[in-house]
Length: 226
Image (cartoon, rainbow, N blue to C red):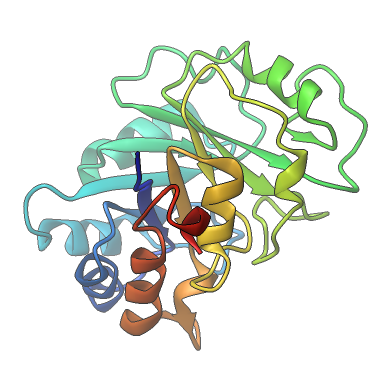
């Protein structure tokens, strides 16, 4: 069985970033429209990049607790093809979009005690129960970091992932060319997501991106991919 998860490179902020990601063989690129993020990009800048892209590129927009009308406006203006919700969006909010939806959850030690509406978890059972309420196309599991929506380049303990979710799983959080193969062997995700792990000085690095994508391409059984 071949193990080739889909690769999404997140945090594109220039056409050079996009070229590096696509040149490395990424299946999808993502633009971050979350204003507190250091990778935030203005919709007009994102649109300029997207209009220059070749065909067959999957373009994702990342949002967090954005009003629905604003997401619709940005998605249409930028010609996005999928939406990723990285905040505390409810199951109701995530329904009835005209785009495929990815819902992100944060997972790992230190997350607050699970409660109704939580999107950060310390135990897999609670996360799986929460995910069951969401009618989305995929779930992205990122590392939990206090006071941050993203994993901040940190990995979590992959062994704590206790089973499959009702939709495909995209793994994020601290992935890089040196550990992504091990992560795939342990988790067997549908896709992997990376940002800082393929950057140098805050910009996408073609060599790192190419090494990352190459590390995702192997066959299970060949020494477990190592």
